[in-house]
Length: 150
Length: 388
Image (cartoon, rainbow over the protein chains, first blue to last red):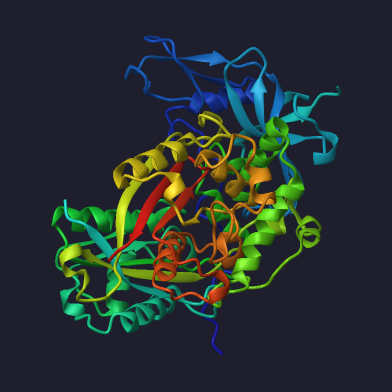
């Protein structure tokens, strides 16, 4: 049979991680802050609403003057599980990994994130965790947490 | 507003099928058109297609014209795809209802179809993860099983629900699936087998999860004045409700109380003029075992937190207070996303018409269908009544 010259490797046009520079997104500062080790979000300067995820327009008052505020880098597990099977493309080699809802200390904000350094069996609801920034091969960044000893 | 009826039904065998999206559509169309021999297809003026992931898993956008051609239809009034992830099927019925009730359409075919199985499981799972917010939830490896695992863990933490109670939902629904030749998993399972099945996302195990399933389902719908042209036993849609709230997991009103379900059910019951206690059989969205337990609670069948006891007492089996998922549910039939909501309505319709095997036949007068999607941020409820 003839060779049609099909590509040997099929790559996703998108992966799961957001495109992060100012040429792609108006919340590029979020990713810049992450590179500095800071987890941040936006707060509306008109009505004071603090929301996760960062926005460019306030859905409460329609204002578009939003400021960056720091979120606490520590929190506690509100709920967690571990992915043993059925991980999405790109993450299938990471199994098992823990994913959790983290309540940030002293903040109304909760975030979903992976938790490193622990198995499902190691963890309990309420366990303390601390922010960790991870860097992708292409220079993009993302956030996870790691378990702090009880 | 005109009264609207389901006057014909069609299903395919569900499973890991050696059949494409278009072939599944042809099969369900054959079953539907065989069911309504009086139908002149030229009179079908509208077509609604519930397909959620056809763009990604069949690599095919814009499916409505494809479905029309496969079925030999050329709708002249309303044609569209409805996409609401796992609620795509009931959404298609809901839009057909609105179109017929308002007089924009007279005779509509509704198709729910999904080709889920492709050679790469990680790609299937990536497509499922995109049903959640890809940038902030899916990116963390969250898709359906781990999300519903978080729900199950919180429900166990807050109310003392047990893994044995979760398993009983799977046992019940597989018992009924064993009576259903269309089901993907028509085999009984024991509680021990569920508890010992492979770890997926603890506390959920393989048999706590609905399957990755190919399948299609179709109904013919028209207004009350025309219904008797197609069947002696039309089934009328008497109430509908839908409620959507939130997208990101952390912005949901609650993980363990489905307030959108409460609102959707309340609206559907108000419209139908009946209560939950009038319902003879229900199809509820058991995508995971925890889901069905929470549905008993948030439909108001038992106190919050008592859903596990409700299933252990047999209240959701035939002979109990609220026979639920008699076709085998998503756990027993599998879950081809857009097809599920249509197949739920078909089960109620075929129950009313005495077209199901005697082991699971309850007949009845009032039926309820419940479909949820995403991270349970959207719920749709429909109340059906046996006409005549």
